[in-house]
Amino acid sequence: MSRKKRIRNMALIGLLCILGLYLLGAVRLAFNPEKQQNNGGNYESLPKDVSLEDPLKNINEVFQVTEEFHTNLPIVVLTIDGEVSDYKWFQDGQEQVAKSEEPYTTGTIQIIDEGDSDNYLNDQPSYKSDLELKKRGHTSFSYDKPQYLLKMSNSDGTENKTEILGMGEGDEWILNGSMADKSMIRNYLAYRIASEIGGGKMAPDSRFCEVIVKEGESYRYQGVYLLQEAIARGESRIAIDKYREKKAYSSYIVRRDRFTNFDPMLNTYGRTSGKSKEWIGVKFPSEGKLTEETKQYIAKDFSRIEQVLYSSEEAEYKAYDRYIEVDSFVDYFLINEFFGNYDAGEHSTYMYKNTGEKLWIGPVWDFDQAMNNYFQDEMKPNTLAFQTQPFFAELSKDRRFIDLLKERYAELRKTSLSEEHVIEVMTEAVDYLKSAREREWYRWAENYQDSSFNNPGSYYLQDYVKNGLIIRRSNDDYDQEIYNIKTYLHKHGRAIQGELTKLYELSKFNTSIKNENELLLLVIMSLFLVPSILINRRV
Image 1 (tube, one colour):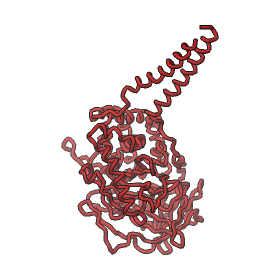
Image 2 (cartoon, one colour; image 1 turned 180 degrees about the vertical axis):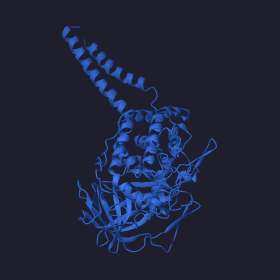
Image 3 (cartoon, one colour; image 1 turned 45 degrees about the horizontal axis):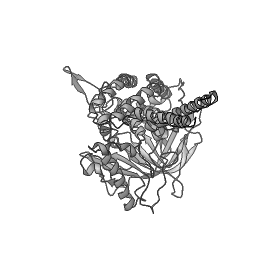
Image 4 (cartoon, one colour; image 1 turned 90 degrees about the horizontal axis):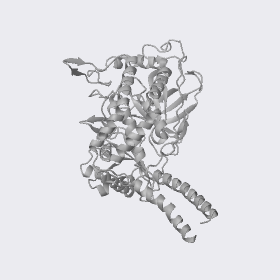
């Protein structure tokens, strides 16, 4: 072989090597896809409250505020036409609805937000709208401090889809101020961190505010709330296809939760087979637009996903990644496990599916009872529990899913879930709420200082006995509440990686591609050898 031909062959082989490495990366990407880009959410850093003024200066003993009332938080002023309805109650854990009661009450909302300076009650509002509102929540429905679902509307009754406080456009919003969370930061902390991890697909946007109710010519202070996006379809919410009523199939949003009279309930495979005790309710398309044909399509489509995940046959089970977006389930597991939110997975668990695509899980929701705030038991920081939740108990049978959990957690501990970053976000929120939390604890002092079983309007943490001593879980000090959260996250965050390794004991399957390395080696060798043989034959 001539020198020229040898050089040409070496150059060709070098080119094939580069091509082989490229294909190697492409194949590995197919086996282990990178995390999809997310929109990052709409969270910004919170400025520190540097006020030296008495926080209670403009509030009297019956919680009325003067027109000089001001705060570093946005002010939400509600005018409510009449009494807010107590339209439901719970008996033996089941929702009961008063048929004669209309859940929604009309009113108006004004939001005062001057941006970088304090907001005064007599400032011009930056947002105004008519609305319908109702009380919301399950356990929190009976608390003295209510939470609200708001439906913004125009004067002609049509939906008023608007951006609010830098959050995405929508007409439905939540005013979340659960008395279960004395710290006021549990939901905000989890949503902001989850937004960093998975963007708007994994967490709703939210903003702290102080709510004041206008009653005639007077204003009554209601407390610190988190104004947040409701879970809904939309370009700024869950960006899936619009509903086409003439088509049987549809994109959809569902929620796993208790039975409710306000969503269409599905009898999916999970319930009919006895694999799941909770219900799947349809959040989108809305009940008023959802046809029976589309409802049956969603039930059948979701049931097929359940059949695969609950299957004991390896051939069927190992196909689950064709039906669900596995990365979203990995992140959902880790976010809820890290913050100790063990109500998720079973209750308040949202999932959605775009037309022709896989099932996603999220956004995360409702962290009132997370971070060692569950009413029945003290949380054990050195163990895991989310692997017992519906769907995740099935996914934890797969060694590959556990591998993904471990790899992703190791990655997140260097960024969004690092102890330094989580404490930084916590400190930022606490400093931002410095004056507002004084007003909140003043307004609801009777509940926060007497969160006992004898006070049904508050949240009660059950005491327990340890070494013959009664351990009282509730406290009446804000700083102690923050310390409890930090202590739990410190201990639990450090324990998770080692505990994830123990999940291998649960694994029955391994859906990883078998002999992946041998397959890749064969592909690359064929790229090298076949052209080389052809070249040599020509020599």
